[in-house]
Length: 69
Image (tube, rainbow, N blue to C red; front, side, top):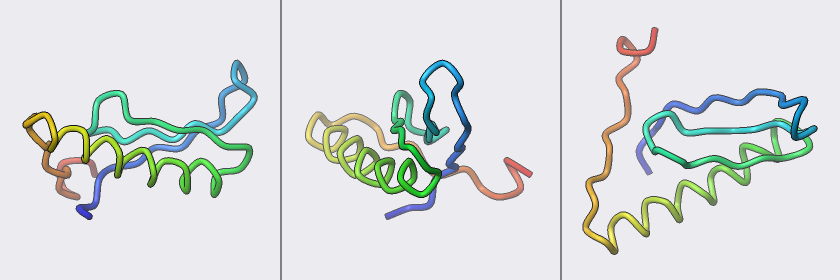
């Protein structure tokens, strides 16, 4: 699987860690720990990409390091 930019942050509103993939619009997950949020996000990413392929939607390329640094 390609390497995408992942952001994990604490949400006071949700009382959980939220993990999002910057390049995959709407792809996110949550967990009680950072590790759990990341684990759930990996599943969400796989499903996001699977559905995009099934519908013929474009698959965004991962950002390059210099694009996010």
